[in-house]
Image (cartoon, rainbow, N blue to C red; front, side, top):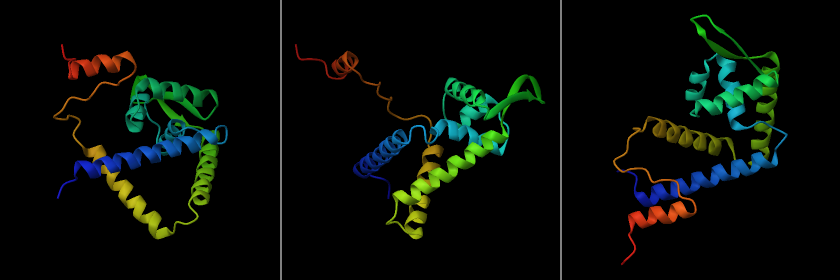
Length: 172
């Protein structure tokens, strides 16, 4: 049996709520921790040195986003660029010792934050949530990039009115 649109709508609403809550908590922690993009970069380059384009693809962000984030981490001494031995035109991004220390601090802080925020959860509930979220992540990542329907344009202000008029022309 396939996923129904009403249940998919509930799933999207729940995901949206989780994302907004995480962003709200992260904003309250401003100055206490690092953004998801910065920590994602440190995690990725702690495993292996990467080219900027590969790093952007791994994080599923635009290359310009990765470039700005790497520049900020580099300015703070958390990552460094060095020549790619396979291609003299390219460079690799690697983590520094200070970057490893900050990443470890960030992981400890985040872990303590999650444990404190979920005092009524047990290990079985956390394992079930992890299993479901991991399956969801894998399914979404494996989904085809094309869709039978065109994606709607982002709506804002007069653009929304113009687009709505195109979809449902005003009665003359």
